[in-house]
Amino acid sequence: MSGSYVKPWLRLGAAAVLGVALLASACSRTDSSAGVENLWRADGFEVTEGVTTEAEVLEALGPPSQIISLENETVFYYLTEAFRSDRLLLIIYNRTKRTTRYDRAIFFFDRSGVLRKASFSQTALPRS
Amino acid sequence: MLTPAKALLGLALAAAASACTALPFSAGFTDEGSEFGDALPAAAEDLIAGQASDADVLDALGPPAAVTALPHGYAFLYESGRLSSKSVGGSVYSLRAGYSWSDARFAIGAFVFDAEGTLVGRAVERSDDGTGSGFAIGTQKSKAAEQLLYTLPAAQHYWGRQMLRPIPRTLNQASNPDSGESGLERRGTTTKVGQRSLESGYLTALALLELLKTQTGN
Image 1 (spheres, rainbow over the protein chains, first blue to last red):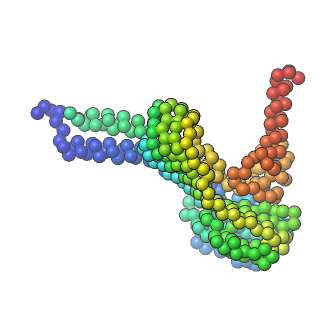
Image 2: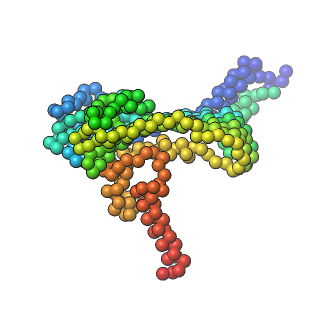
């Protein structure tokens, strides 16, 4: 045979690499996040209703995503948002899935700045 | 005969071609889905106006998607949804023919409280409807944009930026549904109702005025 002979295992390997490359180049995953860091999931963060103050929450969590003034109370609203997009584009079969998840913490303070009620999302997002 | 050089060239060409989606002819199956928020717990239906407090609602459902002050109290809004669009078809340049079908599942809960935090009214809606199906021949139109409407970042991220909007909108800040001080709005609500219509209508009027000035020279 001439010098252009390619061993079967090499041909198989090239075909496998080609297949993987085709598949990989047609798949993508995008992750992004918005909002504040969900520090309320940090070890050691605790609040006690009737005891914790606005100042202590601000000290621990930083500026809220939103502050709302109610008639008798102030609300601190913290929000972390995670967005994921999975795409599979194989020309004859195309699939896109977008998922948005939220991790929230909300605090209600009375007129004297003492915590009346706190609530956290049941599903926690991993800390970034 | 396949040589290593030919294999590498083929690999590069295949990778380049598979990254290019602007093919003049195509046919296939497309599945697009969007999902946002956690499902609204069934406990939402058990909260009774006049008996439950805001603490009961928070304990049962967690923090709401949005909070707003009202003249004599406040309100919570819970939202989650799952949308799906599927289609089978083909296209030649921008002409497309195909059959598509879709469905949308939403869970929405609105809870209104008096100033003392007692639940005075609630509305829970769970919809699980097909939004339709059909066969069509026409130009390309993506449903992705419609789904993205529901996966836009939450308004709370832009709360502090509200006062930096163009003057007409900033002056109307007290009535902005995203401020948390003036009512709630479900995602996907058309901008042709309520406060949004005032803002867009005002801006449309300004644009028309500018156009008139340009054309008349006055």
